[in-house]
Each structure stands twice: as C-alpha cells, then as structure tokens.
Image (tube, rainbow, N blue to C red; front, side):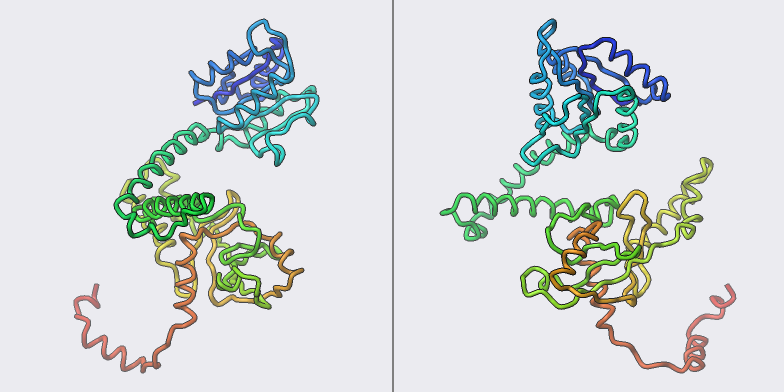
Length: 380
C-alpha cells in the first residue's frame, strides 16, 4: 500500500517536480502525494486522510488566494510537530529561522535546502525511514490507548488508597505529581508485563536505545575495540558517588548467523508445512528461555546487529576513574531494559555462586543406568 505524503506547496510547478521525482526514482507505487496550496487545505487533508509524512514549503498562504508568508509555514510546522507523530521535511532557503523548540530541531524534522535535486532527496530520505513511516499512523492510536489505560490505572488505586496514601507527600504538589506519575506508570507497565513476558515480546523491547541515563549503569552495552561488553557491576555501586575503582564487564559474543540457516529455512519456503514452522519456532523460543549453562542469550539491539550470547566465563574489569567514566559513557550503544536485566543478573549470580558436586565413577554410573533403563528403550 502506498504511503500518503502531505505536500504543502503553493507553486504548481513544484507539484509537478515532485511527481516527476517519484517517476524518475520508480517510487510512484510507494508514495501518494496529497497536495495542498495553503494551510487551510492542508488542515482538511490532515483530518480526512491518513498521513505518513509531510513536505512543507514555508512561504505559503494561510487560505486560498491569500498572501504567501514565511511565518505561515513556520507556525504550521510547529503546529504539526506539537500535535502529530510523523516525519516532516521542510524545504527552505533560510534554514536558520527554523527551530522546533528551545532545545533545537527535533529528530523527526528534516530540513533541506532548496536546490535542483531537492525533490529526489526528499523521497530518498523517506525511503531510508520507510519502516518508521509505515507505523507512524499507529503512534496516535497507541498514545490514546495509553491515555485511556492510565486513567483506568489511576482509578484502580482508589480501592487501595488507604494502603498507599502514606507514600505521597500532599504538602508539596510538585513532588506529589512526580510520585503519582511514577507510581501509575509502574503499575501500568507491571500490568502489561505480567501477561506478556516471554509470550509475545518484540526483541526491540529488550533495550533502551539510545541509553537515557547520563551515567554508566548496570546493563549498559559498550562497544570497546570492535567488541561488545555488558556492564555487570551491581546497580548500588553505580547509583551513588562512591564509585568502584573498576567496572565489571561480560563479553557479548555475536552468534554466527549461519547457525540459524536451518531454523529460518521453513520460513523462506512457501510450501513449508505449518508443523515444520512451529517446530522451528520452538527452537527460536528456546534460544531465549533455555540458554546454555554459562551463557545468556540476547536478541540484536540494532537492525544490522546479530544476536549475542553473554559469556559468563569471559569477564574483565576496566578502570573506572573519572576520565575513564566519560570515555566509557561515549561508548554506550544501548541499555538492557530493566524488565529483562534481573533475569541476566540472577542467572549470572547463580552461575558464579553455584556449588559443584563430587566426581563420579563413569563405569559405575553406566552400570547403574544399565540396571534401571529398560532394554526396550536402549534398542530404540
């Protein structure tokens, strides 16, 4: 299905240029241009059509046959950035006048200088973000669902208010508001996770990407000299300013993708039976839930990355002085989500604290097995 691109441009010749760029790049089946020559028409299209992205000229009229003014385009651009969740390209000869907010230009706003091949560049940019464009209409629905469930979650607290009332400080409204936000969101996330953990989780949910904290933390994945390592130093040692002298890391060994050749084969063949696919799905599930002793499986944290095994035997420490902390912080590429971090920590803790058992006589053990295993089982 073609993606809808809102084109706000009052120059009809430019409309034809964008159409021609689609044909030249053989993208006419991938994108449909919804053209508007003024902001009033653009607003109507936003209300009646599903928009995946927008291309905006700044110097446009507010209404049909009205005067074209750059302030009109700037105002409408900020309106879209505030109210809508889709990528926007602004085509302008004066890019210094564009600011999405106080922190600068937001990541989903792309600014292109008006030049000869700007039309083709716009669609090349959309092609590079096509996966995001395809799901962008779902963002408003997801946000609306979250809003509704947050309200329900708040009223679920009503019946337990006597128990949790003491946790909130009503004398400080700002603190109370912060506590409420954290409490309600945590309640909602726990509610979702209670039903879906290891059931229908998408591998992207395993990570926070990019990392949000302004310091190194447990579960951070670092790229050091073309190798990947995950921070295993205890959270309590990293959450205060009494930092340890060294940071403990475990190696993340990429899994060779040829190991998956047989696993994915049935999904590449149209004539594969459902039974074969289900069998291989079970193998994939086991990678997550039944890893080898001394390893912990993690899915890829990027589109181009590979799944990895965290190797409990491959451990190293690195200096954690103030200078080193800054360098390590810049090497972070993702953080293991706090929903999945405990499973890694618990498995690693169990591994390093395990108690072995006495060695056994192999001959005696085989003799014992021969005495208890039925002969019929041995023949099969």
